[in-house]
Image (cartoon, rainbow, N blue to C red):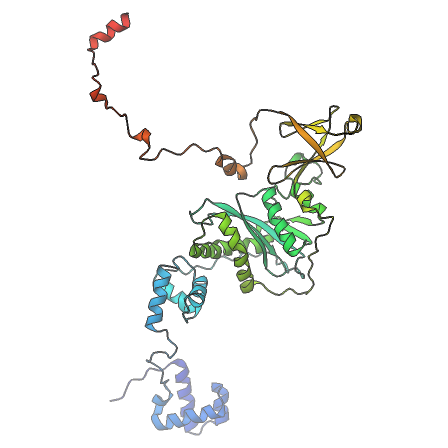
Length: 440
């Protein structure tokens, strides 16, 4: 009885060639050209065909387990970790942790297949491709740095939601600054920028969105040459600010925001980080690891960052600055407070003088005249009126004005009275007595 053989299309084509070769209707050179094999392999196949027939062309590995297959012990350990410690991780990040932290030997595709089989990961459908004009990376490190703020629940409920400020270099894709802040504001960006400047130097340009911190968006601003406080500070430091028209134009920082919302959140979960202070302390270590994995080499070896000079007084430049005119009595008003200038010079010398009021992040006031500090006293402080708050700053403004928390279940207010009403000997009047009381 003939034995039924299972052959692949590749093996069937080899069978046809071997039949013609054994009947000497084809040369070994022609057979090698058809099957794309060397003369040595053709001789080996012909010998197997003459000895065992068609069965000699069937792969001997068919039906056997692969030599490089994952052991059941590795599969079991990997699945236990994926369902507990690394629950919610994507295949790529989960593979990194299984290899680096758990010392398991398996490929990222093996992790992906295990997660799909256990319904821990769903295959994502390919998104519809939207064509955008490609922009080549800048050539030099520090030539263009994209900046953005990403509001997100970074601590997964262990702390209040906050904003992560992200600075990424366009030429290398290297994250040069990360910082957790309560909200996007001038002082938060100024503090993050100061740390970046002291570590790397001044870049040539910042690439941002059209947030009010970077660009004056009021129609009444005039010809468009007005500067925001951050724009004024960067102008003093000779750093250009370029605003993108669309999110896709600054896609590098938008994509890294998505990466951070996945990787950074899970790294902080593994370390039990539950506050912005601990998060900011961990960010330098995270940046070094992220840049080692994903940063690329720039086309040019020139570093476009410029070192800080003695004229770059960051403590003064990165402050909120407004111009005021002194009155005849050498007073000025700023934020509903009247300040009286104290000076030994004749008072007429400073009348109608233009001074600059500087406010730092700690709300400390400094008044400058021709670059010199003027002493002052607070003359009068007006009552606070209704203040205008933007939509992005609303949560921050309400945070300090929330209602007091509800009393705890064991609070004395919830325990009731010391003496129950039933023991007070209360008197119940008949309904007719009510009319008598009303007539009195």
